[in-house]
Length: 266
Length: 336
Image (tube, rainbow over all chains, first blue to last red; front, side, top):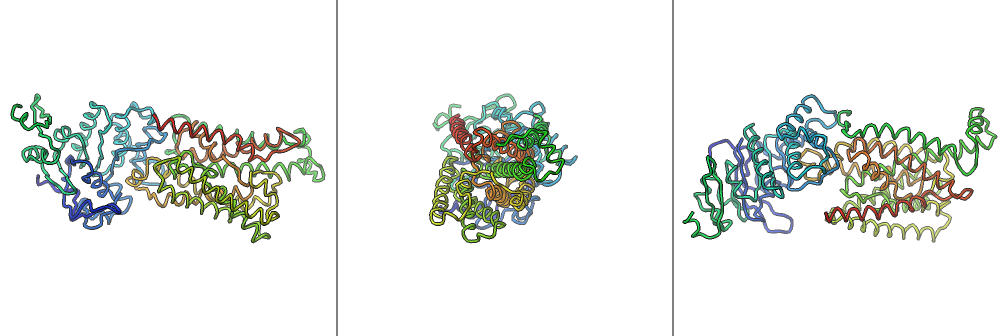
């Protein structure tokens, strides 16, 4: 792992859903500031729960979660919403326009006033960053899946948090749209955001993330850069597939095989 | 607030249009009725202040309170429906569908039975009945949230239980509530201005509270988790919205009886026109609800004149099929 300061840290976290056996028991993980971290792992390993704990949708049974060096339980509701936000897997789509949705991102900055000049500026910037200028007055129901996802990301950008959590941001999107979303997240990172996302797509995670956190059974199996993870062999251990790095032009792309001997031939 | 209310699809224009629609409805409600007077006759009697004339008395003591009652009941029930639909995330919710009407009705009759000389208590009793039912439904909704229809079925079950309570009281003590049968279907005949004072105060409070929540309700439509990550106090907003919905429905029921479907038909029609931004949806539903009940009441008074239908019956004839239409549509959306 790099020596970049941690923006978000889980210290000795334990958690169990009511009536179920503990999902996390003394979990210790950290997420570097200003980087993209992909959280990977098989279904039920606690990836989404991790994100929900980080943004206080769930409360841990024990341990501390530190955001910017401060225990998250100490933040006031609105201050917290200015620091960290989560884009869930699924939203109900209300009958509103893109512009209205994006303006909801300004809620933590003043609930009972109209939109201030700063609010309008943040909304405009979020719309530009997500390239939604032409769609501002469209209703959400008129958008494609990728456009709707961009609109929700724009709302999160208008919220202007340090940390952006995303739960399966490219699920159910067409493959080229998935790439667009990842490119967008890379641009956000360049702007200083800490991005933490749960992904199913190992290839995109290895291609775009600065760091990978591999979870299995509620415990981190490996943490490190994609190169470190590839060298460590934990992907085979956790997912039962062999990753292969392929050089295409100046990019490294990734493929997977479930037959170990194929790895030698590639 | 005005920045938040900007709509690209001219929602504000619809809101401005609704105001004259309400005014025209009020004028129609005042001009027409079972007894025929020409506008000139009415105008003459009122401007002369001729308290002995039939035209004056019918206008001042029958039509005017009745139209005011229709506006109040329509606005209150429509906004109550908007609130319930928002907090339950269920487009099929409405005060009568989820049992709030019967819950309020039961307490009104209990109040009439035990405190017969205290008509001022009726809106309070109706509010408490509506609030208790709404909280109960919400607690159940948390458990059945997987299905919109399950919530409706729960409401029907609660309605039946409270309905049984209402019928028990009426069988044991038939004289406990004058005009009980009109109360059960909901109607506005024979309402006096005095009866409306307390409910009007409740409704004013409920409308102000509802509008104060408009931004939170908008964000709540994204789902509870999303609202929470945006910094909305979801539990508090929901509780306040339930209280407002119960104040509004309870106050309307206390004088208009168990009028059905206003809280379902009006919010849906308004959403169809202007979308679901509560900044416009709430005031627009209030205005449209008022117009709708005035016009339905006018139809109920005049269609079979000199006989008069309670407006609640007409409302059920319109609302029942509309509800079935909504169920069919929600199933179709689910299949898509």
